[in-house]
Image 1 (tube, rainbow, N blue to C red):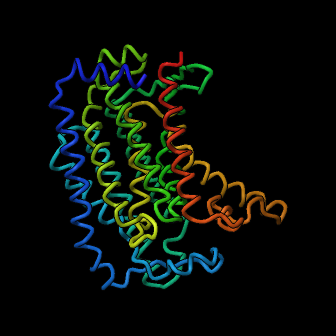
Image 2: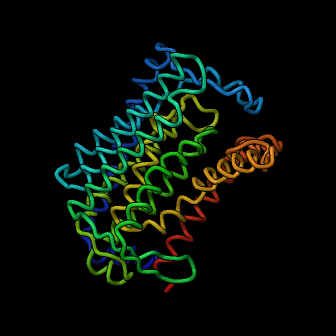
Length: 355
């Protein structure tokens, strides 16, 4: 599938477009690093340092004084790049910016409370979830009212087939779950150096390919998926996210000199979730970002099982902490998660031409 897609791109699309996307990727990458080196000392001076829970593995004690709230760098770079490289009159871009800014504010308040009160509680879970829900519902209703995309879904069940669903209620519930669920799942995954940023890059690569296909009439017909003309701007947005995440990895790879905090993970997760909804590829997205949801499910199972039996399924949740307590080194866990994320990306793209 990828070979056919690349051949089509090379022969039927102006190769200048490829170079433009590469230029955007390099510029966002270098911009992130530049902004990072400017903001990094500010975060240190403001004493924006990571606070770890007492129950975390002992290896996390050394992370206590690492600067956090590095997600500010990600958000600034993405917004500046959107204003520079995209058509911000595009209604898809407007939805993305609204969500990005809204979730950034929620994450910022959460991180601020943690630092100010010197604890790991931050914004209460109810308030955080409430505001995430309000913002996501506003966007979903806006999508339906403006008729930006159809609420008729073509769900791909991996290795089984397509299921057509025509229900605005199911669309609202699924969209809500994806935006809020992905935002919190990415936040939960952000627990080790470089653990969340590379899977986010892989997922964004998948969304880039899907956005390109849905924005092209011939390709969308060939792969039997919805044609969405407005999604061409999402191709550029995905490149921006990839370049920004690569730039942040400069600071976040092991041993991390900077953490993104909730101000980075919440909007980043919500954004990639919203992109999947706008291009109507929700089911493939759930497969691409599978590890994010594995992390979230491990927490849910742990809580439910403990309340019922007073026993734990895992030594600690999210599941990456379970493997830490089992004796696996941090670098080993992180690299293996990267491998799993890449495999999930490939498997999800294979589904496009499986039927």
